[in-house]
Amino acid sequence: MRREAPTPMNRQAETPGEPATDAAVPPRDGYAGIVSRVAALVLDVVVVTLVAAVVTGLALAGAEVMLGRVPAWVQVPTAIAVSLLPVTYFTVAWWLIGQTLGAVAMGIEVRDAAGRPLRFPRAFIRAAVGLLLAPVWIVGMILILLDDRRRGLLDIAVGTTVIYRPESPAMYRARLSGSPRRGDAAGPAVPP
Image 1: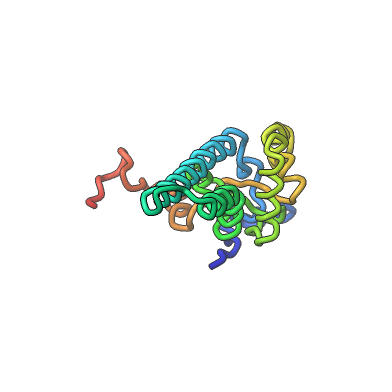
Image 2: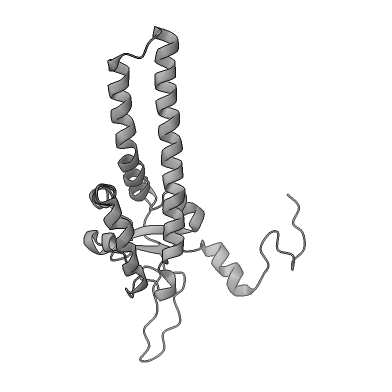
């Protein structure tokens, strides 16, 4: 199920001559920086590597136990599945929720240039180009330091941007009202 673009939560009262801000187009501090993005990518590499190792280990060990050897008809599909795992992981995560597991951990998400969730073709192109040209993806992140919207070369090429995930409306209201969140030392303890 696809998620719709967030509703404007940070809309300010309009005054003459001053437009309201919109959550779909965050201010500069709403765009994810290089540290958050690299940390998310490192976490994603760990996730994909672990899943690939488990899939490979289970398939080959299972064949060895059941058949006494590992025939080519097990090796080839396993190799194909493991080689398609990274592009599938990134594409599906960006398309369905805008976030990989690394991005969830870092509180960031990928959107199109207009701030909308990615559609499948753009998510696939971003994943395929990024993985096929991984060194360019990594080196191209230097542009994040120079671009007003903190876009890397891959973002510019495929028309995406990475933002800090907007808060839920409840969290936003709580932060504005100054009420402590669950577990904060300043507030009363909330029983589980």
